[in-house]
Length: 115
Length: 113
Image 1 (cartoon, each protein chain N blue to C red):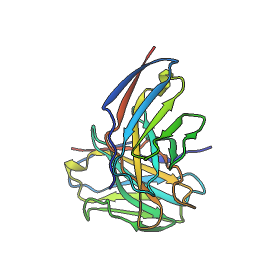
Image 2: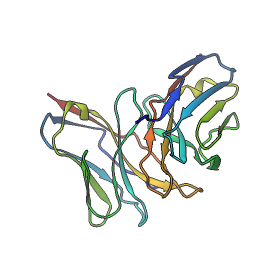
Image 3: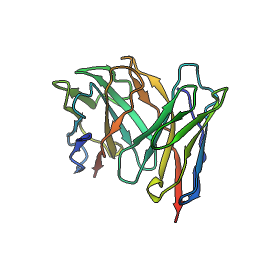
Image 4: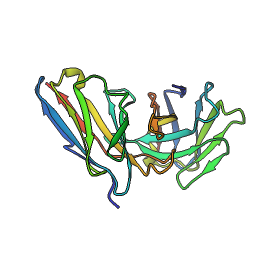
């Protein structure tokens, strides 16, 4: 079956521009997560959605970062006024979310490069 | 957040068993132990998870120490496809009741033909 799909796979933009990253979770998965992975580092949690609500936004690094989810499905992560330190791979994961400790299924990420 | 400690890297030979260790001495009673792996240019892939008892699935086995302060991921017959960065993770409950995975730097497994 279809896995988690992320687009674009690569994004290069100039410092100061806004970017939108998209995540299509596995159909029927109610939980959705955003992480980012900087070069040579482990993954850093950003935000968690249950349905369309985001009960945990604790990982968003600044108010330039926001995310939304509509229809309990697609999610977009928006970064405003991008900075060079925002360069990273942004990964989305989804899980059944019906109970805790469901495996998370990851997409292959969006590689964001800020010039 | 509870932390895990893994070697930076390990090497194994193809078709031999591999034991990947993880220490988590500050684990709490409700923390599950998760293993994910990540191949180059891909997102992480779930491998296995457990709480207290040893666990087996089609990919691997997880052996958990009686005091839960350490665990070992066992790949029964390593293949070249198993070469990846392996993450041992203690999940943390989010405010919404689900879990977020707190990744460390992981351990790079090299499989020699």
